[in-house]
Image (cartoon, rainbow, N blue to C red):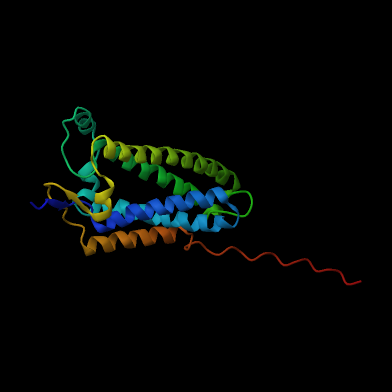
Length: 229
């Protein structure tokens, strides 16, 4: 007997997910090591902004289970899930809380990084808009947000292990293949036009966050002439 499968996660959602995993890991490593890697830390931060904006857009125009409207964690849905009365596909209400939490804290982390500095050689691309005092405050928020990200990632990984070992549900497989075993309604929507819109918005966000629209800094003042004795 052939096992029934249905389409759960579309390819853009899966590529976003694993790209974000790699980008966050690379940002963490480069930020911890510092030094010459800080330039790459900034580039990776811009990449994360592009990924986040893409996901926000894809949450509106993507396929069925990628849309935020499909898994908004209302209080009623959370209560139903805790009572074992919730039935659905995609993110369950607790998983949805984790998704929105991660998207929120990563957005805060990336946004503050645009204005941050390390008091040595690194300045975020929008540092000049903030100035030293505000930049220092946003840098402190940036460091605090990183600790919250570690906590949420640990909870996320722990939840996957729990579902695999206790509930016997494989959450990683569908995020790799896009398909889930069992009966279910396959995802629809999220076509080429929707993908193009999300990609354009992501590219515009990276351009804006990178400060490409800002005027170049003024040239340094000329050096004072040395008296000729």
